[in-house]
Image: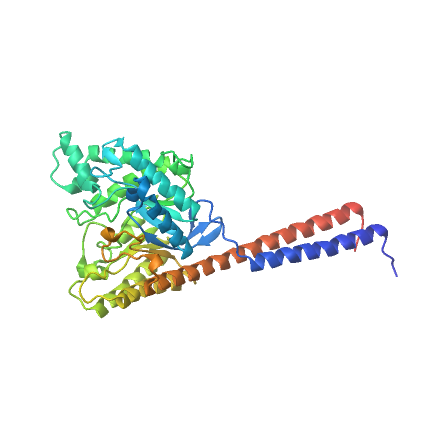
Length: 442
């Protein structure tokens, strides 16, 4: 019988301690799916990823955040909205980074900005960061609200341009120059509260080129396709950190027009637009109550179910990119509409997202329209949800958050197991390498 030398005994003891140490590490990795919220959200195939772990987020729209934060006396509404959102597991907020002309304007005229309003946006980003919420910032509106493309065209007309349509926004060189300047101004802004340039701020998840772009003067889609291509390239030349999406509602062009409600043709194409280089993920909006006003509620729900599943299918098989359901909801203002009907709309969207997400599919989350804070009755458009009121809808929102967070934790644990395996292999290699140097065996 070969007796173990003192050196051998030391090595065995070290080996035993190593097993205990790595066993403890494995226990920690398996039981603590720690989710780090810092860092830039990226894409990997059909998934969003954050710090190497697939990222799924339940979230909300709150277009009014910068508007409210411009007035310091109203900022508590912004803070309370983020606190309530975080409490209910919401991790993504979509809001406006534009207010072109008019009251509390961000851009008062081409290239001129109101510092007070910009500081309001600084506050929004800082509060989102404090509450662990990622922000999606839209850069211009298709509609007249907060200026939009109409305001840009009017600014160009005031400088002598002969423009006949709001859709000249997409083609006129002066207007495009105004818009590019806005992109650059926002992206290079240094936050007065954090000291970080927007383009370097991980709290910002993505930029949005336009809220619901439409160009009805060119239903072929060529005009918007060219505009997205040009603006995506320009934005990415300034900011390589952040994701970019168009702001699309999800309508199809000639590729699949029958899928559109009432065969809408508005100059956009969910497939062609989202295949443009620089566009990182797709978005879909869902308003069957607006799009199918002459249809029964049951028909609207049936349409929504198909609408959600069709876009998930196309994101997976054609775009091969993530898809975010960036707006959905149901107004309670219309006569006969009930909260139970709204809940069913939420459930339909959430179910489609969760079914995709739990299988590693492209649906990465949903953002309901819209979140309001207490005391904002004048902003109530029928779609508003006040989380602190604890309605059945709030219960559905919180449950979806829990389910998506659970998926993220599962992926975090799997990643930790892989880290543990790699660490174990390194330790094993180092151990046997040390044995060879010392000339000892087991």
